[in-house]
Image (cartoon, rainbow, N blue to C red; front, side):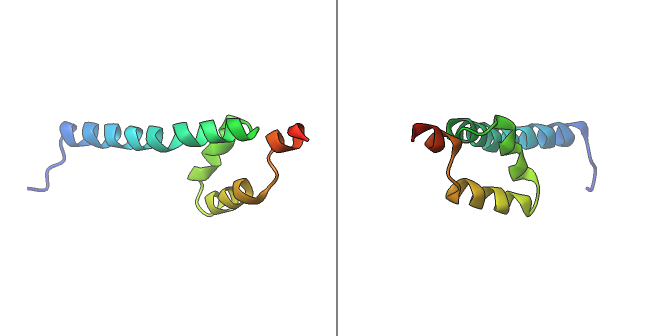
Length: 69
């Protein structure tokens, strides 16, 4: 009761990495398709800045749209 073992910590690390991958890979691809550098998707992990980035992606004219004109 109340013990913390290696299995628990390994499970926690695997679970954490899984969720990082689940969110980072699609955000990275969206940023690249929009014409932004892929690392811009990592800004989504910074509290409060993630809301700003989301609104920027939603309402700014994307570089891909600018090049199409």
